[in-house]
Image (tube, rainbow, N blue to C red; front, side):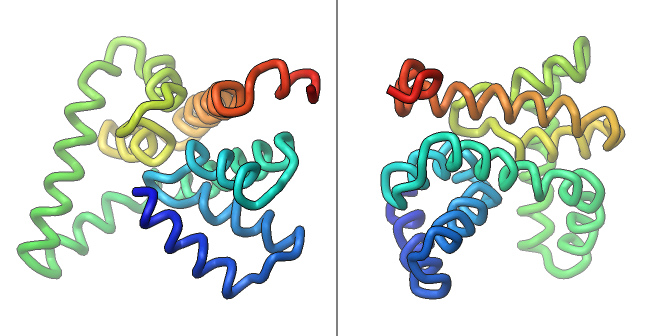
Length: 174
């Protein structure tokens, strides 16, 4: 994971450069990536790219949310295309769908609150991408899922920023 992130970071740095705007764009792009999301983009934005904590957090929040509507709206079509394209891609689509269904099993009772909490928990396998996949698989409408995922991403942003840089530094700029 670290090696992959480092490779992506070097590639983006070579393409975009090292200006302030470039560092903001790199942070945005990293936050849009699955697995990395804002959990990796905030520490990289501040620690590696030298952005101020609030800037890295806000950019990561926006970047993490950008792909979510597209995932919810189009993931089923992408899975259907994968199944039609090849058996191996079909197996991958089935695996991702089963993973989303298994993680989504516990959400049925308090669907939207459960989705929000699931996205907010900063652990591997949780986050906006998986939350959007779960919402799509469980047929949760975009207008209901998007706010729940957004609130979860906001909570995750606060938690990651606070855990990484300290809540005192985050709140008071110390």
